[in-house]
Image 1 (cartoon, rainbow, N blue to C red):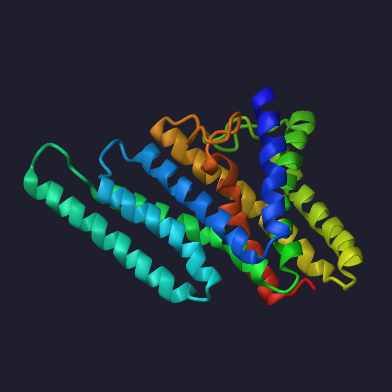
Image 2 (image 1 turned 90 degrees about the vertical axis):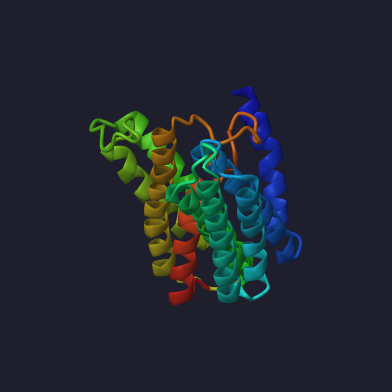
Length: 275
């Protein structure tokens, strides 16, 4: 517990400073780093030692480059190119392993896992880069990040004090219906209150309806993201994805929900601007 608290006290202020104070490029660089580490952690968790070094290199490079490409305004082209490169490299390695018949079989599931790690993970995290680049981007990206914490906190406390109906899913059997509802409500309340405070600081009016939608659907996405990566842990017998953050696990353990929440918040604020 002590390691967890100390790591949070050190890492969180640094992350928030990079997110809010320097130009957006600094935040983009941090997202690139988080994405690359997360991609490596996923491959290590699901690969079973069969994802070869060239496959890992292509996947990690893709995960690191995709958020930068989106920051540079090359989103569609970057996604298309990197998806092709990762797929081509991984299939080539799988074909070579099949031809050599040396006991190492790279299956289609391994190719798909590298594509998920090298494209889907950074694509989800890149929503945080897009939010930072928008007008009032500091407030929007902070909304998406803090929303995941508010949802988790609401779900935890509602589950502890009110949880009666557990076993909603075997992936996370200790979570209750009351916990999920508490998380959803916490997301809505937090988003609306956050908008009111942000409007006072920014000196601009806010669309509370848009914020409420961000809170509700962002909270749902947060819960889905948490369950999705818990499912992977269960299937492959993984406790933590890594140890880069003492007491917290790996990057995937901390940012899994943001990969789902970020794109949802981005879509909503693009359709219904908050400011």
